[in-house]
Length: 175
Image (cartoon, rainbow, N blue to C red; front, side):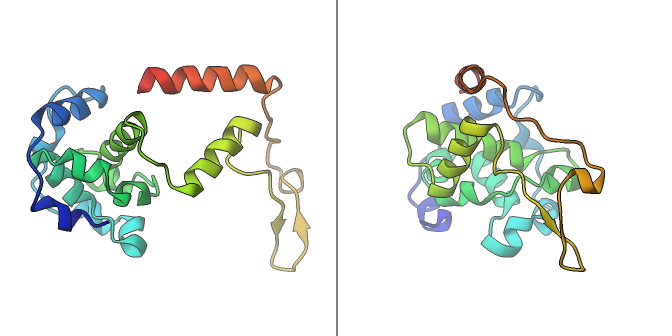
């Protein structure tokens, strides 16, 4: 489902726009008011190169109050969270944080989460990591573990149930 197709039918939702700005707690004002659509955020976006996500358009849609269209779109899930949009913005607007807020709103309203995100969530809940610790293949085709590369060992939660409860408490607080 494309955002472009839906914007012509959408109505402005000022109360949801305010809610998103409230979720961006580090900012005191409406972030979208400062965006002048220079598209520097989009020029560095890794998802734009592969998946046609355009962070400056996300900010423009927020400015117009077209929240439901973005929450119901799959485009919000394509963000790779590289934070380049925040680094490149001359106005210090963070489209990535807007996308986090939109994802949280989608989950809170019961929207279906794409399958890969569910898999990642299950992995984090079960072992505290997005994926299991991997070995690295070197140029000489030999595999090495973290210790072989002088990297610190990664620890998994000692009490998975306590970890899950803490993680869920934080998630509920943020919603």
